[in-house]
Image 1 (cartoon, rainbow, N blue to C red):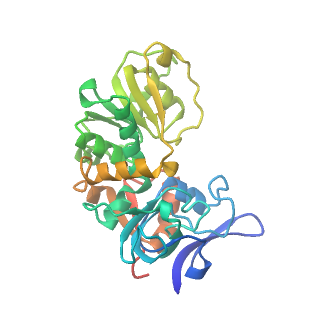
Image 2 (tube, one colour):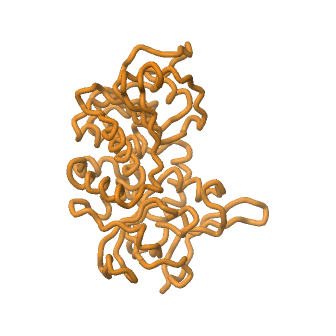
Image 3 (cartoon, rainbow, N blue to C red):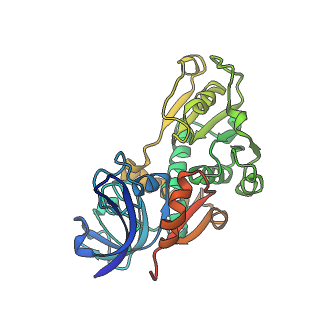
Length: 333
């Protein structure tokens, strides 16, 4: 059966080209589950794969898309029946396995989660890997005994995919959220998502490079890295937790051990792609119930076609121009 997919190829001169082509299900990699993809989403990692970053995707030609939500078309696993609505995020999807920017994917059954009962397929993709990462961050913070009574939580890069969902679920869970953004037009958007305060990037800067700072927050979910992450650690209160989820600014961490050995601060990492299935199911159930933010998702999501994704939005996310989440509709191409 032919279907349409975004196809990234490497030219003889080492450049990369993107086109929308027809492919066959028989050409997809091995796996027990074939899924007709209804929606995907755009993550920073997808844009890197789509522009030839071999740290993300080793071999081309390739179809990116680390997220997919759709309906089981073929199943060779008793846990899933034809017609089941399902979600796939992370693992190797869209990295070295043809991903959600095609109308069909074929994947191992161990990658597949049944659609949470209170979320539609589109809502699951508005959350996607970005929102799943944000939820993993809060889940891990609460494993370290974080709770709303401890004080405010800072979210950096708060208008991005991870940041937007982080602000929303933290607010839903009862936390006071300080949203940090460099976008001057973000105030109304972030307040709607539940931010109690919106601050400029200077709020999480330390130009004097002090070893420690006066405590200002109970914890943070950081998408920026670099000096911002260092400042978040230095101004975190006793026994607080800072979660590192991204490296928009820098992958380097030029820090001392003082926040850890004097204030007992926890630096937590999230590798959402490799989340064990048992934990993955817990996170999705929280997003389905206690952390259900479906009332916020229409504001966070912008729905686009595969053609629009290719022509505009892949480049826009690399340029830092995206607010919220881009959801890709693969129906009726």
